[in-house]
Image (cartoon, rainbow, N blue to C red; front, side, top):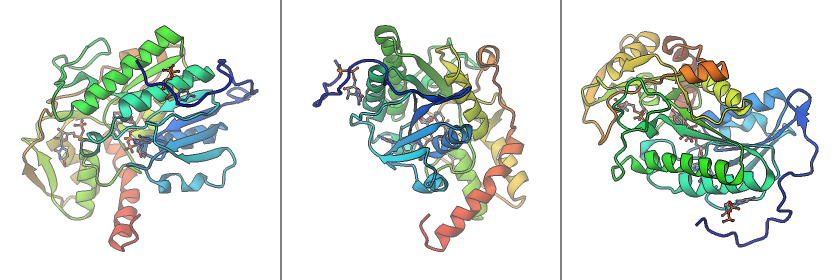
Length: 338
Ligand code: NAD
Ligand code: UDP
Ligand code: UDP
């Protein structure tokens, strides 16, 4: 049983009584949890640009105020420092739930996927808001089916080093579906494949940010294992389009949101070298435990039902993150700690 609240929500009804003014003339009030992070901040830009009111909830675990500072003077924008593991009362139309320590070096520390998702579903239930969960391709584990369709149930080690993330997101999907079936909450589930772009955390150990930062710093790119494992890399603006399309649509999902272009880590290193610095080098390092051997989304379902597909290839997307990375690395070097 979910833990009980120690205070009264008030109201208890479903709608807020507020008259919204957004989409097609109706402005929506939208919560983005994890909105100070990489994906979240790009999503917030899109929603604010569209004319909606946005409330970001973030505890700055991996997110940064700098990702949102350009919105601070916007009256339709609000930023709340809050850990979603704790309950919160808000009156909103939609919830994009992104809060999550999203990289292997961070995600073991935190029960966000379970407690945070439960709280946001409780909130959605109370106010009758639509709820979108950003799940992950990691729910497929080390997949035995390739490419992965949404119907595949996955191959996940429940007690491994990554399981806090994999199983945490699987539990989050379960909770979302339970609230959908049991409490009638309108949920949407996105299974996001590896995504990159400006504002990615510089040092959370993901492969694209590592390779790009290493190349800018003139360090060798660290290839783990033999470098023959594959991933499929999606540019962040394509993902944001997909998330907004999913929220605006009638289908619960889950939907794979990713770019089907598949690369080995050695090929990725080649592309980084080609587009950022031809003199870049690589060095091999031992791989981490339970590393999935390959991953590539089958996106037929999103294409058909959401009319969505990614538009930006790896060679087009990588150069777009370079100036942001260069500036932040430069600022770091100057001791500004940005
Ligand atoms: P990120 O680390 O940049 O963003 C996550 C944000 O959540 C950060 O701002 C962090 O401070 C915040 N956060 C973490 N725990 C919190 C808590 N308990 N309360 C409040 N805020 C909290 O990561 P991202 O890449 O932007 O990921 C966003 C979402 O997309 C995550 O749910 C992640 O699992 C999912 N996802 C991302 C990718 C990817 O490749 N980027 C792939 C699959 C899924
Ligand atoms: N919750 C919240 N804000 C709300 C409503 C609920 O944070 O506006 C949280 C609360 O912590 C609760 C969880 O969501 O534990 C699940 O709420 P629900 O009403 O579904 O469960 P219950 O409180 O009845 O166990
Ligand atoms: N990887 C790598 N060098 C790095 C960081 C990661 O070769 O500096 C590899 C890692 O072993 C994995 C792949 O890149 O096979 C993707 O890792 P990432 O953490 O970016 O994403 P995920 O494993 O969650 O898909």
